Amino acid sequence: MKGRLAEQYAELVRHLWGGSSSAVKPHKLKALIARRAPTFSGYRQHDAQELLAFLLDGLHEDLNRVRDKEYVEVADFDGTNDAEAAEEAWENHLKRNRSAVVDLFHGQLRSELTCPRCSRISVTFDPFSFLSLPVPAVQTRTYNVVVVRQQEIYFPIKYSIPMDRNLRLENLRERLSELAGFPMKDSLVFAELNLHEKTVTRFQPVDNLLRDVRDGSNLYGYELPGTPGELE
Image (tube, rainbow, N blue to C red; front, side, top):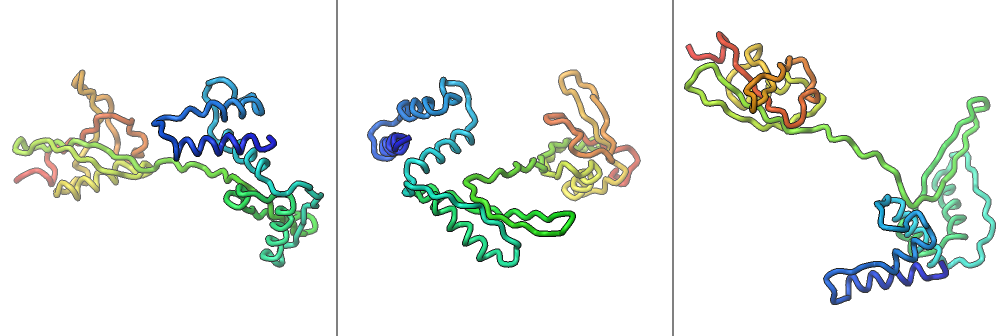
């Protein structure tokens, strides 16, 4: 962008960190980006990662100190000396790319391919500025359970227990037994209640997975009669 993107970005940073305004509207930078990438025009919701990739690539081109870019053939290695191979590949990358963006955000990915016929190994070191990583699913959830004892001298007690969603209600019952201080094996039945209608929505067998318990459900554990937890 002949330096215009870098100038507008620098101006925005100066306003953010050195200005006297409590709010800054980056309309000049946005307009410049929209002219070069119409997908970011208008005020619709856009992908933040795509915007960041475009911004970093544009800043790199504006700040690239290499003006005459020579042709560099992609090197192919056999994997016998990764340290030297990575250094050579990086030097080749720097022959066409030298900027603050490269210094801060670029790295290398090692890729290895093996021919299924001749078993020849081909190793390349490719530059990258982004790594796509999967977002791990949340496996832990806090389960709120109200334990109701048989004897009327006991008040119902609510327990909040963080548990792995892949465990079973049997594991939740064991944890409740530790917290409540009385044995619950084969003596506690789980049920989801509709408190507005005062009805049982469904019973939950102890071999069910905890992830089968609906979010926000009212989970109750009822002590069965004639069990070891009952008073003599």
